[in-house]
Image 1 (cartoon, one colour):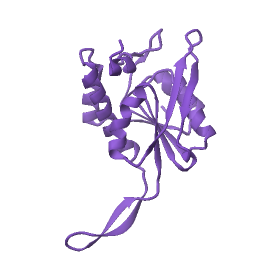
Image 2 (cartoon, helix red, strand yellow; image 1 turned 135 degrees about the horizontal axis):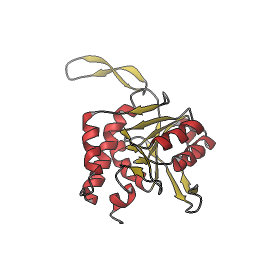
Image 3 (tube, one colour; image 1 turned 45 degrees about the vertical axis):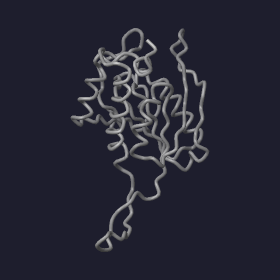
Length: 210
């Protein structure tokens, strides 16, 4: 496996993934779990943010302490399921800007087609973190990465809850410079390109559309 693939094995994340997998978990709880899992994962994805030392007056004395140093972030959900992760990550990084990328799968070829892209105007000054609950074939993610590279994003990371081996192989082959963070790597993709055992269609379960 590529050194750019990180599996976040924190017990709280693993527990929430188990609840997400359960077919009896309803839409409301599913949305909450996706948001909570995204927040927990965001701690690890932002671990390398640079710090600088400042002086702050506490009620008792001056203190030398640290704050994030000049790094500007943008979160980019892949529509539609990626939108469910935004509330969680922006709880941690409220100053981050949000972009959106939408793709759809061409049914005959399984090729991912871009239909929407709206990114922050200053994306070239920001580190981009793409979010989507699932990494299946990796086709949509590769489209999203291509768009961010065209706009000269400073750096690109991807965060998902469940990934497939096939998706990881596809993305790391085409974009070896992009770091992938996931909660778990599942077994394989079935003939319909669903992750097995997975959790079903994340968008449908999140929004109650199936």
